[in-house]
Image (cartoon, rainbow, N blue to C red; front, side, top):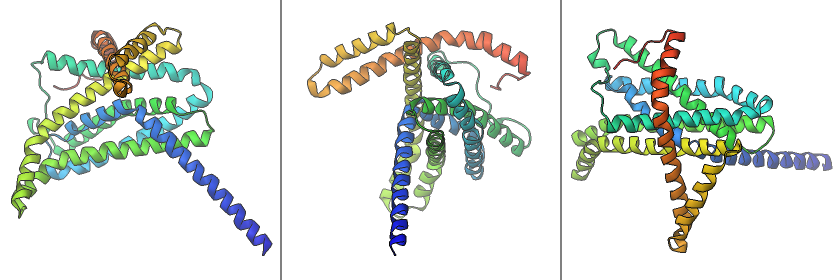
Length: 324
């Protein structure tokens, strides 16, 4: 009997350790996932365009296909690479993070530039193109998964940099939780956004109560505004996160002049408001200055990327320019 009690005590001890490990993984994953907010919001803002123009019955299957591709990107390809970097080349994480931050700045600045200087070109949607719809769906899904790979690489690198030092399995579990959790949140949100119009129309047509029909009309009417707001928030988040990543990376390289000045200016802004608002003002001021730096860096990178890097990449890979 005493042996059984000792065994049960050992099992209980193991269970406590396991529960603590699960809590640690969840806490680390939540912290790391929060750091990747800019890329996450951008992912949710970008993806709905890949189902634009397809039949309503094909929207969710396309999103599910992209979701599976995103999970494969994160768990099969990027997770092992991230763990190898952490184990054998941790010095590479900061430069790669800065590269991802610069890409976020470029993407955000490009969106701002296109909003301020509209182009005469327009994107070609499936209904405008001849050919087999299944083939067009295949093209769109592959394009979305390729775009997701870049955003997923940013997310996993940012998450890896945010994890505290721990053992291999803890890092692997935390990164896996981040990858799965973010994928579910992003593409679950995308599915809701894409089908919101259909839900609104169904409520208008089938609703028995006037309130239900009015709510349905409101959903249909306000979805374009919501999508526009999501794009603005996503762009701002990209510039903020990208700018802060590059500034922090410069500090790690011994070039902390800009980061120190931003910190001092944010502290000065905080002291200019009542005490109860100081913390919020300091955060807002720092985020705004990080975002302004991200926009400036992105605007500098636009001609470099479009006139130099992209043509070289297309020449090396044989890739064709994106259709517009």
